[in-house]
Length: 319
Length: 258
Image (cartoon, rainbow over all chains, first blue to last red; front, side, top):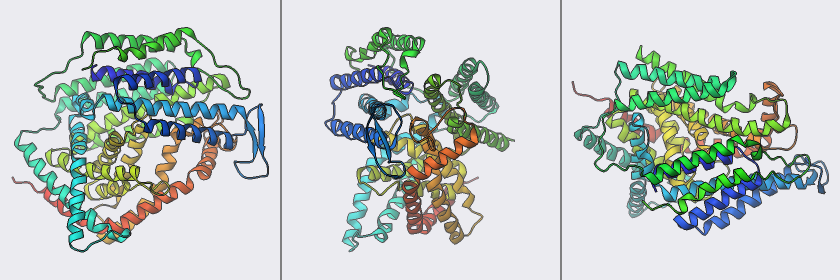
C-alpha cells in the first residue's frame, strides 16, 4: 500500500475523531484501527497498559472534577475546591468518551508510524518546502549518531575521573556534544555544497507566488468569520495549494526510482473520500452529549456502513 | 523591500496563528445542541489554519536564512534537542519540565529570530516523529515553540553576554508559563464541569478569558511553574558556555570569501 494511501486513511480517521463524541462511532474507529494494526503491523503489548492508564485517568478525572448531570450515584462532601459535589453517571460517560477519543487518536498515529517511515513521509513534503524537509531528515538521521556520540563523551569523561552525580556534572557532557555536533554539521555543509545543493528560488516570480500564498491564508481566516465561510475557506486552501505547487516547480529535483500510486491506491483514496462525504452529509449522527441526562447515542446505519471502508487496508497488497 | 515583505508575511501569519489559537473565545452559537458539534468543527478548522500558517511562515523563512551551512547546522541542533526530548519521555521528569526549551532559546538569542523560530518548530516536529507524539495538538506545539525561539532574539547581539544571560533567564521563566497557557487553549473547550472555569459558547471574550484564567490557575499553574524553574536552571547552568560555543560558530557561518 502506497504511503499516500496511508496518509489519506489517517487524515479521514483523524477528521472523524475530532468531529464526533458519539461513542459508537469512536468505538468503531478504534476497533478498525486495532484490527488494521494487528493484521498489517505488530500490535505492541505496551498498548494495553497505555490504554488502561488513559481510560482510567480520563474517566476518574471527569468523574471527580465535573459535578453536572441528573443521574447522581454519590457525593464528595465538604467544600473542597473542584472536588466537592455530586458524582454523576453523565460525568463518568463523558470521561469514558474522552478517554476513547484520546486512545483512538494515539492508536491511529502509532499504527501510521509503523506503516510509513518518517523518510517516506518527508518525500511527500511539498517541493517548495524542500530545505525545511531536509533539516528534519538530517535531524532524524543524526539522532542515533548523537546518542552514540553522547556515550563516547561520557566514557571519555569517565576516564578523566568525571562522574555524573548532580546538576553541576552535566555541562562536561553536554558541551562537548554541542561542539561535536556543530563540527559535524560544518563537514555536512561542505559535502552538500560540493554536491550542488541549492535552496528555493528567491526571484521575482517566487515573491509574487509568496504573496499569493499569503492571500490564500487570509481567505482561509476570513472564512472563519464571514458569511459563506466554507466557500471562502475552500478558495483559500485552493489558492495556497496552487501557489505551493507553482513554487515547487521552481525547485529542480530528480528521482531515480519514482514511487507512483497504483490503481488500488487510487480506488482506496476514492473510497475514503466517499465515506467521509457520506458521514458529513449525515453529520447529525456524529453528535452526542450525555448532559444533562444520559441517553442512548444515535445509530446511523449508513454512516457505520461507510466507515467500514477504513478496513480496506486489510485486503491491500503490501508495498 | 524584501525585508519589509518578509516581515509582513511573518506578522500576518503570526496574527492569524494567534486568532486560530484563540478560537474558543470566538465560537458562538445560540443553541446548545449545535454548539458542541460546531466546537469540534472549529477545533479541526483551527488546527488546519495553524498548519497553513506554518507552511506560509516556513516558506518565507527558508528563502531568507537557509543555505547549506544553516541547513546542516539546524539539522544537527534539532537532532541534539530531539535527543533531549527523548530523554524527557523515557525518564519521568518533574511536572512540565522539558529540557528542549533551553536550546531553542539559545539558538534564537545567538542566530536571530528566523533561525530561532525554525529551531522551535522543527525541534517539536522532529522529536514528535521520534517519540510518536504526532497528533492534532502538534501544530499548536510547533507554533508555541517557534514563538519562543523567535522571541529569544530580543536578547541578541546588542547585549553583553552577562546581561544577555540575565535577560534569557527571565525570558525562560516567563515562557515556561506562557507556553502552557497558550497550549491549554486547544483542550480547554472540551472540559465540561464547574461553570466558573469551563468553556461556554456566546458569553463574550472578556467573560471567556476570565473563566480560562481560573481554569489555567487551578489545573496548570503548578505544572508550568516547574517548567519555568527548569528553564531557568538549565539556562543558568549551560547558558554562558553554550553561548560562547554558538557565538564562535556564528562567526564561522558569517565568514564568506569574495
